[in-house]
Length: 225
Image: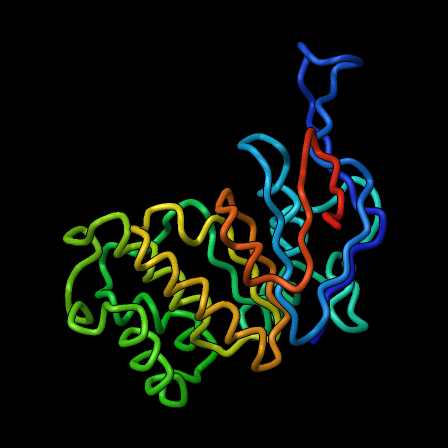
């Protein structure tokens, strides 16, 4: 699969800003090709997460469109967009979001449960948990986990459906150096297996794993030579 953004932008009403609007993302084109890892770096507040949320079908752009293969993401109904996202777009959000009433393993398998494919995804979940060093935590409640462990749970959940597109927002933010390298290697291998991967990060080391690198400043995306 591939994802293509065409002239997308986003602004928010803010009375303290010029003309009452704050421009979070300036008009942007971006292509995420199958089998590639694209890294976007930049400071907090530069628009990186807003861009990722638009690409993932979570925040409608003010202008432009987002195409997943030939499907216009925001031309779909809300239900259709959610279904496409569940089956084909893995999102590892910056904010750690888990269901407290489910175990670690159940949280990871949640996308598969929602699509009725949990039996097929079970082995994949085990492999990801082993790879991310959280296999022994499968029956544990999220409230018992550290921030770094929760981060790895969200990464495993984003990958459990073997999505054609992966959008990872600061996936190493809570991790030590060893786990950071492990996650970056996993994302590189995911791209090598055919997934279109977008990595939004403060981590400069991520550039060593990427095919294409961009930086974002004040909502403007620029390619790094």
